[in-house]
Length: 361
Image (cartoon, rainbow, N blue to C red):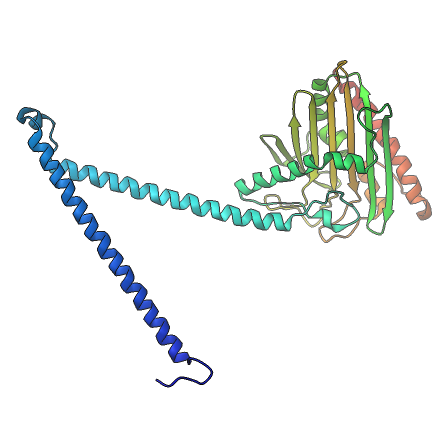
């Protein structure tokens, strides 16, 4: 066969591949014949051992205890069948596990929660949950644990006093405005004459109406999702104003500390939102600590963004303000960014006062 000056020809490569395939096939057949030969040897040894055992047994006992060859063959067949079933089940589990790992790798690469999220940037609008039940729960736990891990860093970044300092923040709500809408930052740190158990009960009972601050929330609203698994809880609903709320909550509880983290889920394979639905980012950290004197130390940091559509279009401030019960209909354009925060704070004060009787000391 003639060889090309620059190397083997395509025909050479094909022949080499065929030869390699036949070599592998022959090698496999040799291994197969060795394996079968070994099985025959082992079978002969087993038969010989059974014959020796039979001869060594007393005649009466042998007659009483000896199984027929049909029974032995049936038992061996059943054992082989069970082994094949177990092997099939094990292979299925391995395949499922490998598929889960691949899916979670793609999810982690696609999901990104910034340590210091900026509501004016689209990067923090990329919190996703998959539909597969196993990977979905793993995703929930990953999001909540990441937020819990970064809690102290967030408190420090937003200027919270040290826990042993005398300084308190009764409550503070600040706004920043940009082309991407507003960002609100709510801060609170103070010692309260409330037990940790009563604090936990209050936060849970006012989760949607006060802590997440859904102005038009009602317990009668239909919940698209209401799921509690372990330390995670997910609630999804649509308000009368078409604000799509899909929050994931994670609780971390020890004897002396209660932590609640909340994150809006923007893309959820198990809950499709309509094009008319709007959503906003909601991210918050609640840290309640038991003090030696029976009181509790509260630290709360909550961030929200202006609402946006499924295409990323930011809703006008006049319209968005109505989600919080704030009316800017008669407000001149040049005063919107000054009046909205003031009216928002008034509405928040009213909401907090309404919720105060719910605290059971």
